[in-house]
Length: 595
View 1 (cartoon, rainbow, N blue to C red):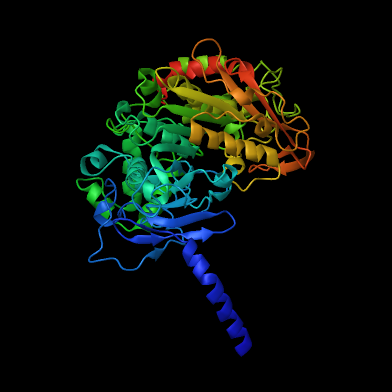
View 2: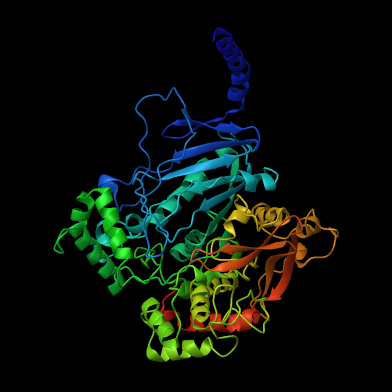
């Protein structure tokens, strides 16, 4: 026993100084924080840094506030080795979403830094480009625990990355005239904005350059960054960020804060909590405990009139930070930021809509539930825009991946559906994700701005399937070459403002022709004249295997060492049987959606 203790003590004596030497301590207004150094990734990581005061008690549904300064001198640094509590999660009416309580004291972020930029540990010269990532989850779920080490490593440890948590569900997106009068609307977006201000003040201490910030997200995280691009009618300019990465931007119908549906959700929420619908509802809600509020919010999100798979509490048009629906603002061209990289997955729509759409009557009933403001004439035109006779329509027809060109297209067929069901899936995908990505790309074209668009098509490219490729850990159907290329697409955009790859990265280390020409080596910017071009990210080769979707439907995927990159350029307007024309239709009726 004594020998073992002596040996342990000796090891500690040898290794501890090296560990301490590798740590970095950063002084922030509320405390000093010491990193945890990973000798494998060669990154310093600060987990769970508070960026705003806890939004609890009287600060519930208020704009984020500065942290209180400590009394007296801070003499001991906090080891930043654990993530902060996650925010209370909101549960939509879809399968497999567990109840997670969380904690309202959740405004934390984590920083991943090589520790080599100027100013590390204090004020100083400019450092590395910065990535700020907002997680997805329908504005009701998710947290800031994503490890960014693999992504940074794939880009030569040349980036400082942050992952930010923000208020979710009713805590982040409760809306009504009373909330506007007594609190703040879109509190979750205001948290994100506050975090971006924190970055401007403090990121140089971590080795980052506040003048080279890229904001990024997937799904609702991507929807968030696009709303920041539109915030305050473009008055923010490049003061908080220059570049935007939006992967599968979820842009649901965005009501006004005083619209009937917003007021209905507010009233239903108050009733579920037990607050009488009389004067002082807001004060009553503030007085309730967090768990009671969370359970009430879940009941509202899983009940009519909230469409299946949606959340009741999402961003609203507030007239100030979010001045109007995105489609309206985009037409005005009043934007923040300079460059946009935006993409969608091949099968975005199969996760949310109900899986029991068999007849056109079923489809129309779903349309009326999901797009409640559409008139009968709108619906007739919508059905004509998505014709059921343009491809396979029988439920017994073999399902397969489309190639973007036909004869079967995403309107009528995929690996998980045909006929009316696929018609529904594609309507939802294009209305809520894909068409907004086209519109934003067009808005960031010209007047000193640029945009680049891609589609992730590696089977089965359901909503969210791309996350593992660029943030990690990769799934078995994502070859090593694809993962490296995808991470460097993002990295090049963050570092240079252009996502183009070298031929070696585009073709991959496994390729027998690593220097072959590839359209992604000179990625064409999106254009508003002629036909805009997207880059289709896919693979060839591999061994087929059967995987199951969340709905229990078998799909074919490919894995193994013979997977090879297959990146091609495609005209975006005729893609998938005329996607551009369908997106024009959604834009034309956006006043009724609204988006």
